[in-house]
Amino acid sequence: MPEYLSPGVYIQEINSGPRPIEGVGTACAAFVGFAPSGPINKPQLITNWTQYSDMFGIIGTEGRRDPHMEGAYLSHAVHAYFLNGGGRCYVTRIVAGNSKADPFRPVPIPSRSKSSPTRLLTFSGKSVHTCDIVVEIKEDKGKEDKSEPKVGRTPAPSSPPAEGAPAPSVEPPLGPDSTFTVIVRIGNVPRETYANLTIGKGPRNVVEVINQNSELVKVEVDSKINLSNYFPASDKYSIDRMPLPALPEGLQQSELVGDVSERSGIEGLAIADDVTMVCFPDLMAAFLAKKISLEMVEAAQRAMIDHCERMGDRMAILDPLPNLSPQQVKQWRGVANYDSKFAALYYPWLKIMGPDGKEMLVPPSGHVAGVWARSDNERGVHKAPANETIRGISEVAHPITQGEQDTLNPNGINCIRAFTGRGIRIWGARTLSSDPAWRYINVRRLFNFVEKSIEQGTQWVVFEPNDHNLWARVRRDVGAFLVQSWRDGMLFGRTPDEAFFVKCDDELNPSESRDQGKLIIEVGMAPVKPAEFVIFRFSQWVGGGA
Image (cartoon, rainbow, N blue to C red; front, side):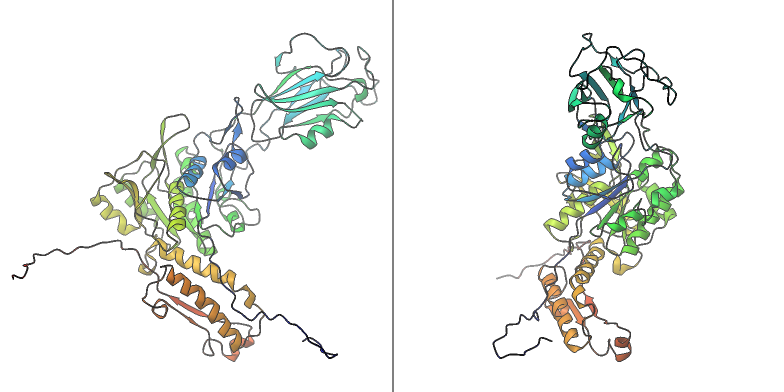
């Protein structure tokens, strides 16, 4: 309490008004898969397709970034997500444990003198986003080799002089002001230039300058050599990249599932609090390439579901196995036997135009996640993300008839169908739950939205005096948020009293509960559910005469 010791007027600001609860975002996907380069086993926030290309793509010989990886679907899924209305997402790149961390083959740079060592400097690639790196060395002062520099590999390095042995003579002698320039190229395109460099001590030491500033290469020197006596030979040196496999070899189940503490795999997405959708399109890529078994696919999809159930604020968008007919996908659904209100399955695969200009089939999860995000932004999370067109596809892998969907829809398999004059649309909105109360995707996601919004908006309540005054303030704030949700069309009822209730009283909070430091609030909601079956009843009617 403030002290009042002398007469006067005292001003106090009292914060006793309502504390509005703001709705959390609902349109943020997370993708796990394979990429040609980029950070490994750590979720990266991506806000547009260009940013994904910059982070996970490789600079090709023409100086343009290629984000795609042969045989993988991650890049196509992320592109489809943004194309269909997604605004931000997280991407986790996974690799097999036996994959090489450094994909570059170091290249030795010899001295200009014939009698000096052939490994004066060693350049190697620094950026995993790059291929076809060429390092060019030019002498700034002194005599220069007027012949045309050769492009290619340098000869194999020879053994350096024994430690303590006198350095060989240098031809010709170099002055203290002799410097050189390093130009780093991607193919034939200059990307970085470092002039007035020296070897050994000096303000422009080649090791310090390049290692601190270059995004493409790094350099080392042989510490056993008397560096002041040598000068690098002017030439062009190619830094070869190790051949990248189409997909990682030796994938283990633990690498797919990941670990929370290491921020890896599926479990590593726990660090991303705003994720609401989880996709793993490259499970099917690894299965098609025979890198993992069917049992590993199903185990990884179960791990996705377990992760979403444990987090309680996101849903897994599952892909079906490739090349399945409607009858086969129904059979596989029964074998996998997933049962969760935090997961949804979409069928079939989709046909898109590949980066080589040819059509290719991709799993649907990336496109579906984008449609979910678009529906959330345009209509709200309470709207079932169905009867929505899918952008960026030419056709579906397996056209589905109404009779075939009659057998798939009751099993929670959401079909993607082509309709004449209406495009290709998502024609299902069911979860994989056997509980009728949680049959629809929008109901589960609406509860996720409300629960997380209230959780974040009532953090101020923790450690407040647990009395009737606090209970009334909690009822007021939560009730105000739910009234707004009702007005936005998220809850069913002609009045707020029909749409929801908020209870926080002595019955829920007796003295025994308060002694344990607990404050219990009950919230009930009547969510709106989609009109999945629209039924018109027609009959003959004989109009009345005059």
